[in-house]
Image 1 (cartoon, rainbow, N blue to C red):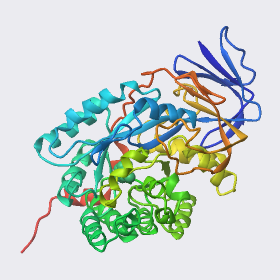
Image 2: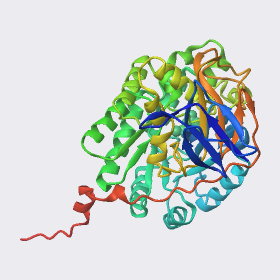
Image 3: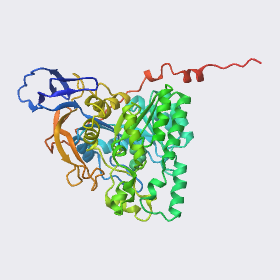
Image 4: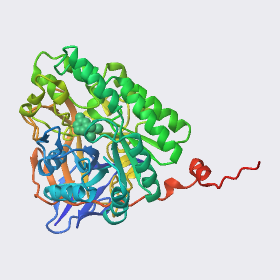
Amino acid sequence: MSVLIKNGTIVNADQSFQADVLCADGKIQEIGSNISAPSGAEIIDAAGQYVMPGGIDPHTHMQLPFMGTVASEDFYTGTAAGLAGGTTMIIDFVIPAPQQNIMEAYHQWREWSQKAVADYSFHVAITWWDETVHADMQTLVEKYGVNSFKHFMAYKGAIMATDEILVNSFNRALELGAICTVHAENGDMVAQLQNKIFEMGITGPEGHPLSRPPEVEGEAASRAISIANVYGVPLYVVHVSTKQSLEAITRARNAGQKVFGEVLAGHLLIDESVYLDKNFESAAAHVMSPPFRAKEHQDALWKGILSGNLQTTATDHACFCNDQKAAGKDDFRITPNGTAGIENRMEVLWHHGVNTGLFNMNEFVKLTSTNAAQIFNIYPRKGTISVGADADIVVWDPEATKTISAKTHHQNIDFNIFEGMKVKGCASHTISAAKVVYANGELKVERGAGKYIDRPAYASFYQGLDVQAEINKPKSVNR
Ligand code: DUC
Ligand code: ZN
Ligand code: ZN
């Protein structure tokens, strides 16, 4: 069975052109004019529409066990919701509990993800350290196609990586040709501020952003960047939400350091006033870390995109329903942290980025797909409409409109942080592995059809890094 997309405009990161696209056996087989349909082919007439690489969300947490509960969205519902919004691949996170064998955690997540309906891969978090972790990182890179390790600099007493862990892990990643990623918040400061604010009598969701001010993120981002610089390891800072951390990234990049920045659709569009909502359910539904920020940070983040200092967009999709958020009714410190967004990331970025003229369609493709594929080393298998690439495609109708709502979304959560937002430009069809899995509002997914995607280790990142050469040079002292 094949799929022929006719009469559309292909939009890649580098160019746009009119052509038909023939997909079969999981891959893009042919791109050209007037391709004739093989017998039995499903034909999509994409006249007036854009044919783009399927979105890659490099930051999701399906089925995450976290803060005493488990995220309501699993790999089946979550990848299906992604397809409904044009996202055809996720990179999720294996997060071992402290002292848990990381291979055991990895295999646990692989088992949970068997039901995915779209392709997926995993970053693996380093939450503790000993010789087994050192050895398992090699196994993950060489045998299981993991090329990125995550470090939570927050969540003290749980999954927080201390500086000692960062130093050990960053060094090991460098040896293995892997990239390091960080959730940049100073966990010691967060814990101290949380207690202080709670003891002042601020117990509701409004205490959440107060306990995580922008400087807490800026300090951690700067520290991670400095450590990465000393060892010469590339660094990817997830969910950059403040101008402080963006400035740290920008400074490092200007100095030639290999640092990347990710921004969440939510942080671009939602501000901290949500935590002052009198309705507890609504305020608690926005509790995520880092929190939503004052508007000046949103302006800085859009500029970070335009200047190229932020390269990817993600969601940090971590769903907790109202009854789960209720755990924090009298204590914001124990509210499960997380918000949804995988289904809406592409349409809100299109609406607020392309329709407003901030960036063009090709830049949209870079921000939603190609840059993630390149940074995480799966390009050109993913992130491009090219012959031989995986047939993961979104057909985008720039004229379609919708009003985002929890009542109509496919995400398994009873709240939508973009509730009521009207957007113009949406996925009309999504193709995953050469099959039409979403068409005009209807999902046609097959449980377990998603594949695990190996991501090879990097080699070229490490050539010519002066800092590393300096460290390796034998030193002698003449007295
Ligand atoms: N932040 C969240 O809000 N949820 C999951 C993990 C994280 O870092
Ligand atoms: Zn995080
Ligand atoms: Zn996250």
